[in-house]
Length: 201
Ligand SMILES: [Zn+2]
Image (cartoon, rainbow, N blue to C red):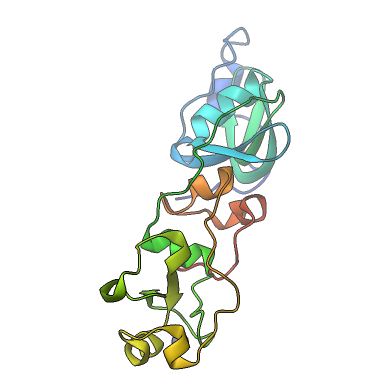
């Protein structure tokens, strides 16, 4: 996606000088097809909205930009950088589901794409208690593992292998986790989502 240099598009934009009484509606630009992470007033991640939607919220003073791109959107009297992250100015109470759907991507995110057994790069998921021995396909029994450990362990239990988990597999919860696993995470959202850096799943 082409980006205008910062500050290069603040003057002489054809839409900004023709009609000074245009309502505060942003001109659709390619940049507004991007996505914006929307935070609650408390800075907790809330949801992902289109950047166009985020701009409308900012122009209506319902949200403020937290992190922006170099792209600028022009309305009648203002030029606005496209927000990557925006924060609602008023707190909204949103009930979140108690648990996060179990998916390969979400397991890799939780375990930072790292094999829980050897610390190597994970390429598969492993059932700690093998499914053939009654292990469940649940958050507390599924971990990220490298192919080698997965192969070596096969249908055996950790006790039989003499292996230990660094920590019990936990069930992720919270708003940030609801956003993960469902879509690609913009790297600029990471600090707000509290997810590990080495997420490649
Ligand atoms: Zn391993």
